[in-house]
Image 1 (cartoon, helix red, strand yellow):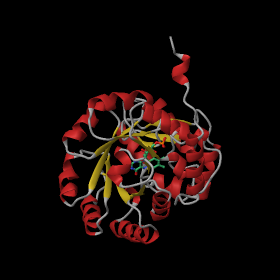
Image 2 (cartoon, protein in one colour):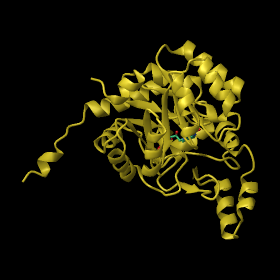
Image 3 (cartoon, protein in one colour):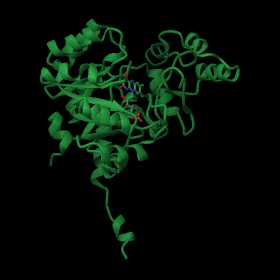
Length: 316
Ligand SMILES: Cc1cc2nc3c(=O)[nH]c(=O)nc-3n(C[C@H](O)[C@H](O)[C@H](O)COP(=O)(O)O)c2cc1C
């Protein structure tokens, strides 16, 4: 069986591993691609030469398709685009920016382009820009997020009725049942971030992975909406932000408080106090650090054991 997403990316299962700064290097991306999903290298935390190295290592580690996630706010984006084209990366997921800027250039090179959005309005704009598929990312998601707080449950069906290109749901998806729920809502596939951040193959610090496992319901919050809204674990740094809000901090003061390299500090260097710890609400369902293969096995087993008899309950 194939569907729009497996056909588009030439993969076995309609499961994309999200691009995640400081988490998704070649090891994670190639492991996911080898399991039949689509692995993405997260270029947002990589200097140009590092991205090239990860692409080359990923090619060595898998002969299956993989892609690169490119947040368009990245300052040296031209170099990344050049590397992607030179290395003939088959798929690019763009995020955090205008899809019009790079879609045509990439598509001319035969690259499949997908854009990440957090609203139906932006999904339509991305479709108009000529992308091949959309990721609709709900407010539950880890990392940077939409200001409108639209949940995956509301966003996916709304985007579905407004676009006619393949749709990938993201945000709050870590289990087989959640994948099927997203597909019932109209998604053709899913993008999973947080669950893959807590795998052995993720490049983040072990302490960060352990914190993901310990994170419970209510332990994350979407904050810094004035800058770039981001879902963070409520650690000491998060508390400092809240204190700044209570003291009526200006945008400039928030920028100063955030400083530079907080995400690297938290997720890559394992500074759980001063670092930015990005993870989704679904962390409350992640109880163990696992290998990518184990995550796939869990998901596939759960889906294969599902019995659909819900329509019987609603019979007249
Ligand atoms: C640690 C972390 C880092 C992320 N970094 C990026 C990124 O660099 N680019 C991007 O488009 N999205 C990023 N995201 C969002 C993911 O790509 C994905 O859409 C999201 O994780 C899906 O929600 P989930 O975490 O509930 O699975 C990040 C998410 C996490 C958890």
